[in-house]
Length: 314
Image 1 (tube, rainbow, N blue to C red):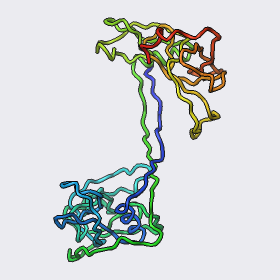
Image 2 (cartoon, rainbow, N blue to C red; image 1 turned 90 degrees about the vertical axis):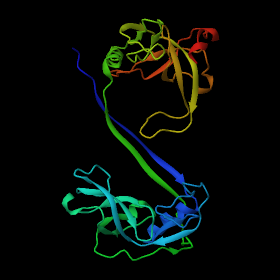
Image 3 (cartoon, rainbow, N blue to C red; image 1 turned 90 degrees about the horizontal axis):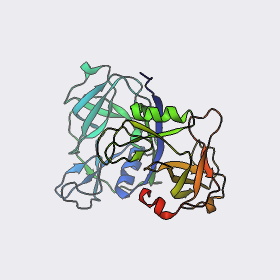
């Protein structure tokens, strides 16, 4: 039995968003060690605040300040913190209803162990030493013996130098295991061949193979070598340079229907000015030494394919 392929993969990008008046006041308030909620039409104070009432959909603008102390409503112990989590040592995820609020805020509790955490325990905010206007301005919660006496008070939401936008890094680390069909596809690419699988029912050849026909829903096993030449079915011009990608912009990224395949795959087009790439252009793969996949596709010099030959693959 062939070895099962696997590889560590990372998907990472910065998530950027602008803030409306409510979220701007909330995050700016955290920078100033002030916790703000928003009051609904029936008098409830929501923390963290939202811009619209979750029940009536009414727009909410009336801000209220709540206390930095509160009560744990529920919790879960995290014995092995992951990279970039709020604390490097084991901690509890907690929902805390701050005094004066009617909803709970999700954050972390610094505690020596799960035996030190319980629903109903009193806690307070431990502020970060350096605050920038983000939820991480609350470093964590910590146990604190006090009575719940504070009530919410109105707040204008006005601060100097308000936070108007945030950038949050998003990252997913995972191990990808392609399975039988795609493992065969990847192994063939390492030999500078492209293989797909034919559906026993509709007879279509899918590249890359999926192990099953997406149309008929039946398993596929018959391998079919396709290409190496193919036809550009559609394309886009990339004008924004990707991080860690040593390709100068602009360049063309295209859907390419390899000869003998019934599904177009992705590939970069090179060897031709970007503004001369067109639908129907005949292309072939260009391999670099030691590579496990084509570096790009270039024109073959053949006449363009007739539209009717690839219109079903758009």
